[in-house]
Image 1 (cartoon, rainbow, N blue to C red):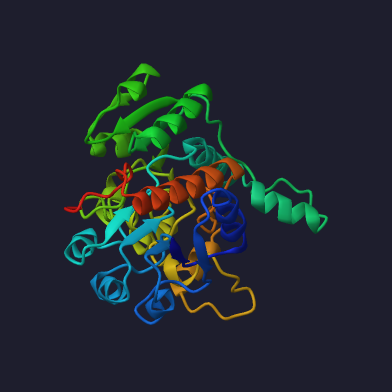
Image 2 (image 1 turned 90 degrees about the horizontal axis):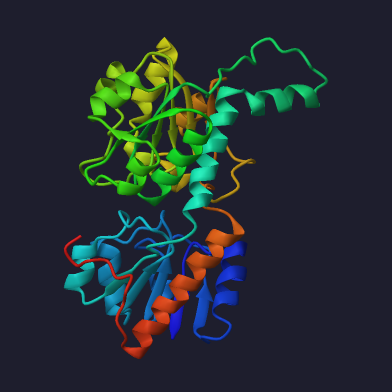
Length: 332
């Protein structure tokens, strides 16, 4: 099946080709992000494969449908970048990756927390320059602290289990409570209580209209002073300017993010030789108690292998007219 693969990086090409070895689909790899301007590159392709920063809105879907595209497969679990209702109107099926190694993201979230708390990146830069002074590098023990987990699906629950192993008290907030979270000793509380009680808050919920800017000026004002915020889920969960203001006053003691609400124009590309005009991210990375990484929490060999295999399996199922087990509901 002819498939245009947008936002294709070297690892995408390698791993997707490996997953496709026996399926035999005709893959057209494109480094371009999918936009209305680049959509014509998929002409003649029945399937289009996208990633989180591709634009799959009504305008783009209309172009794809007019070119004969009948399937959009996103190499991600989240699908807030896709207008599912518009896809249904144009007769385009949409599939996602509903399950891949949740340990990859949970472990990375713990790594970010350790790095920002214990000033690991800063210490590494110092020692490279021959500076072995400890001033400015003091952190705090995680043992005995309270960790709040917003979103207790698979990733959030694994993160909570790891933090429990550190000797932390774990609080959770989720509209859909998880027995697995409670079984490891986690306790559900209202979000305001979680924020007020937690030394660390980690976000693991999807981005919806309800959760957009769940961390904002008001919620940060209610949070425990000096707490650390970790976000490895979706950038839009955090009002970045509000977080920046809270960092300035010390209300927020640290910020570790792998996602950013304006990341589409920045992430997954090398901008080291260009002038970055995003003043918000430039200010953030200048803070000594902030760590920003480029949406890499999912990026392990195991997770990428599962993502690519699931994507190829969905394309194969569509080609054969089989049930699409990973299909996004038309009403989403």
